[in-house]
Length: 574
Ligand code: DGJ
Image 1 (cartoon, rainbow, N blue to C red):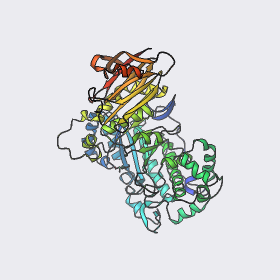
Image 2: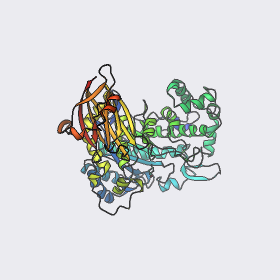
Image 3: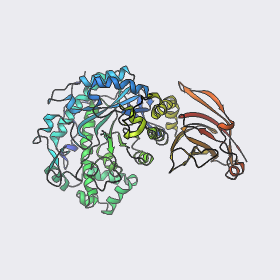
């Protein structure tokens, strides 16, 4: 057995604590541990040597502090077809007294998950949780002399650990490393834990940058050369607004934060992002030296009403500063968004980047959440999806305002439960198609009632399902995943959409349905069900209109009772 590793923090340059690298004994990489792997067009999460799709859900922050309570939650999660649960582990819960660790709770969570055949993603609520430091143990909170607080413009200290404190970094790193060491001992064989979220929505609230003395001194020093090198080397792919800030200030290759990024709160945000990134990078590296499963951060997204950093946590990996995080925290494998906003597809697009696979640790779990899961996984090769607050089934039925539902809820019939059931069936096909780049998805509502997906030899037109007699009548939302399975073949899974095809390669201009069928996947094999024809595929009788648009007038239809999956074979005519 390997002994615990401890750290000596070397003071290097501008950001003493952050540039210090752990002096660790390295654990040789164990291929069977969960890890990320580039497989063709996608980066996928490998679990027990095979690609894995996270059909996840996150509990309330403190649900996991009571094993008794979790005993009531696990069976519900199983009924809702989750394969992974994201649960918090508070620093305070495992190190209530400095240096004395108690992982009984962690063992109980591992046990509960295993008994229910679920994987776990632990959320380490250490120095920061939603920008604040409420999960730090009392011995940390009550000793601001040793573990200092961030300060705001007013000069007031807040209950937030300063990311400029080496003592804080050391204390959190020690606890987190002990936790990861424990996982190595408790989980190396079974691999229940497949990822770790490090901290939770870091960043400073109430000001654009920390005004403590240490932070002020760091702000006055030059921008670290490694960050400037990164900007120069990755200039072409930088987030456009970041590149503009840098170029507007003269694209300098040396200077202070305001010299390099301009004299605005954006420079403060970049400065904070770098320093949080270095802090988390140090912790992530130390944790990986014990148990090297993938680690991600999560982002509190800028809300429409926010005006400047500090209204939202300044330094959090927002799109503007995601490159700063990539430069400063290479040990964080994924910067993940918490999408509690309606425009899911925009956020998925912003966070799915060549060096950042998409994973969504928090979002909605209602019907819109089902659409999000389909869209993220199908259009952005997401490694998984997870709504927040899944220990309250009512929220999954009514969205975030839920919670007052009186009638008993049939958990397996909730929109997300049904969507996850189908995604689970289709997982081998989906993962294979993500790697091949032969998958797409649509997320439709009344504002965006149609989407075209160029996939394989056809353009796939996905529209909200129209009432045949009254085409203006459409459902509020619809979604679909489309997989190209051959030159003229597709699998389409969806709810409340209708789907037509038009050729996208030279040759006859019109695509007709040769045959379509419902079915299901059993152990990855397609088992055909009904043959779809007649009213099942008749979009309307306007043959002249359809012909004028190079359409056949027939298409796949997906009702509200679902989602369901169909296989279609096309042919072409002139
Ligand atoms: C986002 C946070 O990350 C979660 O821990 C939780 O506090 C939710 N907000 C509450 O909606």
